[in-house]
Image (cartoon, rainbow, N blue to C red; front, side):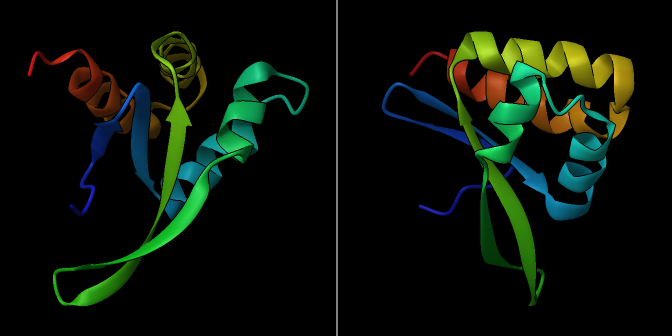
Length: 95
C-alpha cells in the first residue's frame, strides 16, 4: 500500500507532508520543543506522483503528539495544518 496524505499502521499515526511544507514548519519551530523533536524523526520518502518523483516526509506519532503538532501548526505555520488533520482523521476513522 502506498501512503497518500496520511495513513495508520498498527497503533501508530502517520502524517505525510510534502518536503517544502515540512521544511517550512521545521524552520519555524523552537529547536528545544517536543514538536521539533517529533518532526526531526520523520523519514524522507520518494514516491511517484502524477508521473514524476516527489519527496515527502513521513512523520510517525501518537494521537497526543499529532494534536500538539496541529496546535503548533495553527499558530506558526498554517501550510502544515491540512496534512496533520488528515493524519489525525485517518487515525480516528473507524474501520
